[in-house]
Length: 145
Image 1 (cartoon, rainbow, N blue to C red):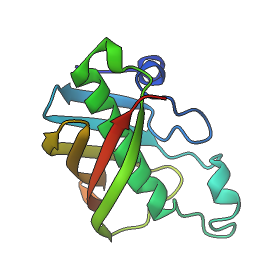
Image 2 (cartoon, helix red, strand yellow; image 1 turned 30 degrees about the vertical axis):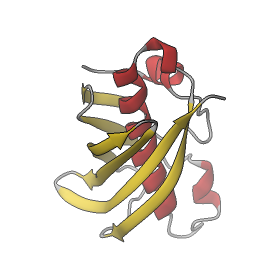
Image 3 (tube, rainbow, N blue to C red; image 1 turned 60 degrees about the vertical axis):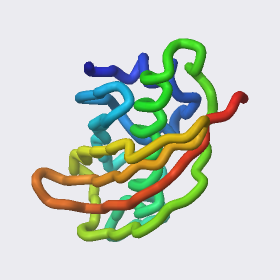
């Protein structure tokens, strides 16, 4: 299943400048999703991180993983979950392997490890081409607005 930006906006409440995924390439309900972030030189965070050598902040790469996971959760749970909030609970074993810079296309793979009630745990990897840029394990909780 592919999901475009308009459908992403129905699934999760994030908006520019904090909507950090542009599409979902694949989504297997209750299992995994692959999100895409086209990193543009016009991103607001590059003004300060860093003006002479722009690098996407690692926390925003992790956030792009979380947004991909949020789409996976909401799409898996169905229409009654659309627009709910998904809050981080933990971030573990985050590793940053390569800088992400303007012009890169970030491919974000998230895999659901387990869930219990409204709490979900994921492993995530962000790649540029075939090169691992970042990885983390994280958990989140879905809640009403």
